[in-house]
Length: 238
Image (cartoon, rainbow, N blue to C red; front, side, top):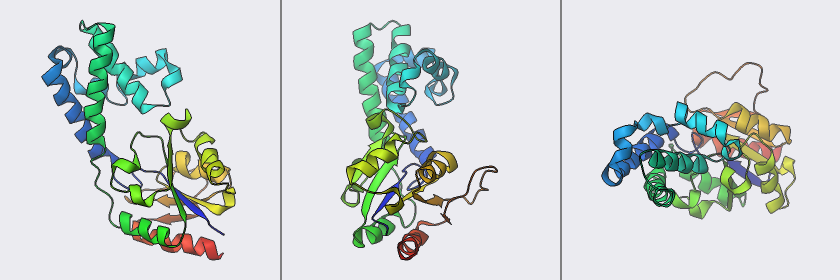
C-alpha cells in the first residue's frame, strides 16, 4: 500500500532554467547597484554553475560541494574580496546579494496540472514530501499547504543520489520504502537513487527526451503531470 509520495522540485514541478536565469539577473542587478567593482571585474557567467571560478572554488572547498547555497555565497565572498572589500564587508554584501537571488529564485511558474495533481494526491490522504538538491523551498512557492515535509541538500549535508535524503524521509514518518513513490526528472539522482532503496519511481519526462542507456528504467513515466495521480493509484492497487 502506498502511503507517501515524494517529489523532486526543479524540472519536476517547474522548469528550473528560466527561474535561475531570472534569479541570476536579479543578483547581477543588485551587485551592479551596490558593489559595482564586482560587476566591473567579473561577468555574470563567472558566478554560474559550470564556470571556471566555481569549479576552482569547489576544488578548494570540496566539503561544501553538496550545497548550492554555500557555494554561491562563498563564491560571492571571494569575488568581493578580490576587488578590495574586507572579509566582513564581503560577508555582509554576499549575504544581501544572495537574499536578492533567493527571493527571485522562488518566483517559479508551475508546470501545467502541478497543483491539481498535488491536491488530488493530498485528497487521498497521502503524505506529500519534497526532496531536492536545489535551494528552493516549497513553502515559498505557493505550495506550502500541500506538502507535509521537505528535505534538501542543505538540510542533510548530502545531495542526491546519496541515499541520506531518502532515508530521512522514511524515518520522519516511519515509512517502509515500498510504501513510498518518488517522483523526479533525473534518471540517476531521482529514479536510480530511489529505486536502489526499493521505492517505487515515476519519471517526469515533460520534454519527452530519451532515457539514458545503461540505466534501469523507472516503474512508470509521465509526460504530463495530469497523468501522475492515476499512476500512484495503480501502484496502490497492485
